[in-house]
Image 1 (tube, rainbow, N blue to C red):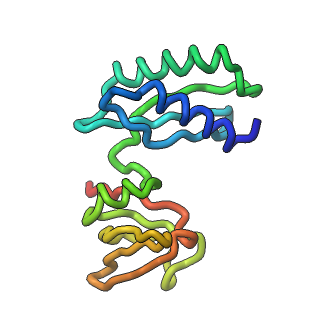
Image 2 (image 1 turned 30 degrees about the horizontal axis):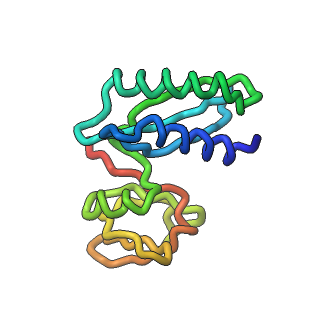
Image 3 (image 1 turned 60 degrees about the vertical axis):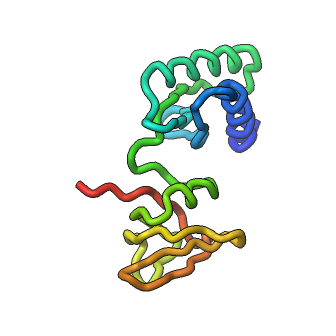
Length: 153
């Protein structure tokens, strides 16, 4: 089974698991680092707790044990997306409007590979609107490798 198929299957199952709760599925990724990891990121208003992650992990583990869609040995992680969460869904661009974000580009944008800007939004055609140094910028999402919430230390 391809990586994207595994992520899709797991996403669908997690949506079923969390239906009727205040939990939200943020993302699923199946990646190889040193080992294979199946990571599930969940959130809710006020943040997720250990008990939320444990409950989703146990139910998902039962499903995966029965369905057995992953042939590789892997580690399952269920966690919060963190304070510097990646913005992927259209709803993320609405929810975090006017927040500062760290933007990383596939190829340099005006000579830089990354920058911090204020998020204005994302339109239906996939163009991300930012305020960079008080100037409006419209950047095709295909040119952006990643957008994360910015954290001030």
